[in-house]
Each structure stands twice: as C-alpha cells, then as structure tokens.
Figure (spheres, one colour):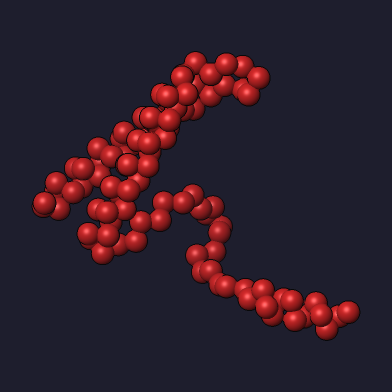
Length: 96
C-alpha cells in the first residue's frame, strides 16, 4: 500500500469517525427520555468506533508512529512522570 493510499484511507476513516460523532451528538437524549436510536444501532455505532480506532492504530504503527488520540488542553504539559505509591505510603507512615 502506498503512502497516498494510506493517507486516503486515514482521511476516510476520520470522516466516518467525525460523522458518527456528529450523529451521536445530534441524537443525544437526556436519561429521562427514550433515545431515538435502538440499542442495537447504538451498539453498532460503538463497534464502528472500535474498528475505526483499531485500523487507525494499525496504520500509525505501520508508519512507525504512536497513535494516541486523546484530547489535550493547550496549556497541558507534554511531559509525564510516574509517582511511586510506595514512596507516598512511606512518607505517610513517618508522620504517624
């Protein structure tokens, strides 16, 4: 598969994903009301999101990229660090 084919496929996947998201937003129903979509249709939409995301991950991996499409705030730091819970437990024991 050429790079052009991959980018076309990714564009199609993103368009389908955006359309499904718009459908979900447009048909949002408060919990006290009956949803206009059947539960089978809702499950099919969820399954479509899963298949689309898995394919996007495969395409990203084939290019050697990480696929991490989680929303981020503009001012959110890019660096992450791990905090050891053992260190936290040790520090709370010293205070007792």
